[in-house]
Image (cartoon, rainbow, N blue to C red; front, side, top):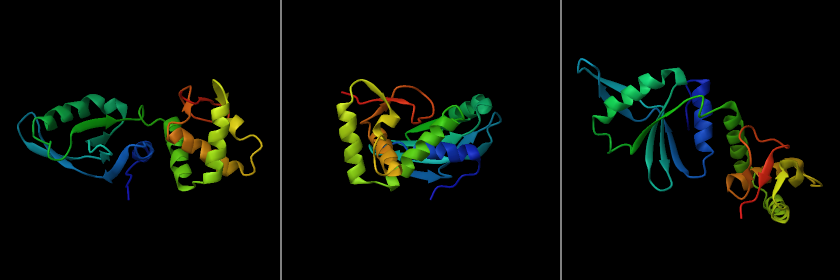
Length: 181
């Protein structure tokens, strides 16, 4: 279970969860020490702890971009203490990393993972293989019996890297996709 203390944390955790290489995501862990300018030790509770499939561990602080300098300074202070037993890296994620577009795309990927339909997946995959160059997302929905299941199948193809959006931003029926060679 992942906890969110803010709307930004919800967006960040959704974007993280939608990555295909994330094995674990934990909230409010770890708690890392750092010293202030006077040498007084403080603790900072990290917002998210991510373990990737390859075992790489990242502690993620979630803050608004306007606090970037303050958080990066704190990361420098945390790095002066050994945290290698807990995390391999410290990262800051802001609203620039978890845009509303990235959040909605991630949300659609997570929903599609929960609704796998082998028949629709294979149908969408077969159509995509026949299309050359770039094509609109909606081309894969044309003539299907169940638009929702087919839409989820297209998102699953995107999630697995079998289809790639050609532009940034929110993926919609009008988005250009391609199948990598």
